[in-house]
Image: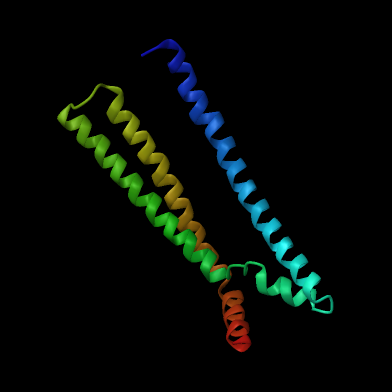
Length: 148
């Protein structure tokens, strides 16, 4: 492998990629905000006596309920845990069958352990959050059902 690419690839993956992801996310949120602002301005121009708060409630994204947030953590916890188990199994398979070099099984096992740890953290967060927020979730569900 070229010595320059040995340096540029890790820099691109570790530095440039996260910066680009953050930039895209911020840009998307700014565009959504600008679109909502344009809608409100157009509505005000057509009918200046319109209630602005009501318009903003209708076009603004609804916040996620606590239960939805907890279920998202459960989903990511299960996915990361299964990915970690799969990578560890793949690394063991590579080591047993002596496929690849000496670093390949260790790399797969290291990434598997990392993913497994993240998955377990999400699952612990889900179960602890579920236990601690049980009363808040019930109250939130009652208020949602009353609004409907």
